[in-house]
Image 1 (tube, rainbow, N blue to C red):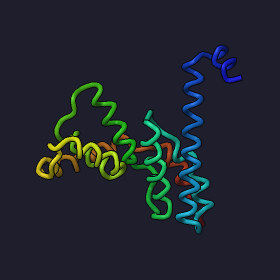
Image 2: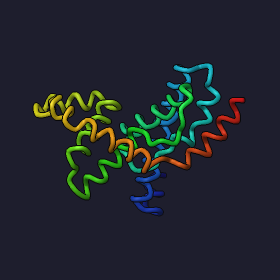
Image 3: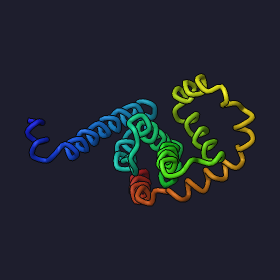
Length: 171
């Protein structure tokens, strides 16, 4: 059946469909985990499915971090609009294909990677002895400024409507 659909619709379309289903599975897994962590607000977490839709192309592991971060904002009472660390990483990855990142951009990328995907960051750090604290300290304040600008620039207004509907259900 899948082979017939691929012939009919084309491989790029089918690849996109398969990728979408993989993301739906990840979203559902993260929602289940969030419901276990915060059982008292399970209904709110269930309603957040549309808020965790990916806003840009990102690898599965990055999407999982994106979904988890957004779901964690619900019990904390935080806004869903600011860009997630994963969205910032994806933007930095995209921009790095256009031009080499500045020291500040690289430091920000590294800082976000360590915060959201510490296992991967540790593997990279182990294979790159030049990733020392002096470098991170030197560009830390510049990276912080860049992070604030980046988050404002890619704020997700789409999630604002979802956030408003969710808060009405809380009352």
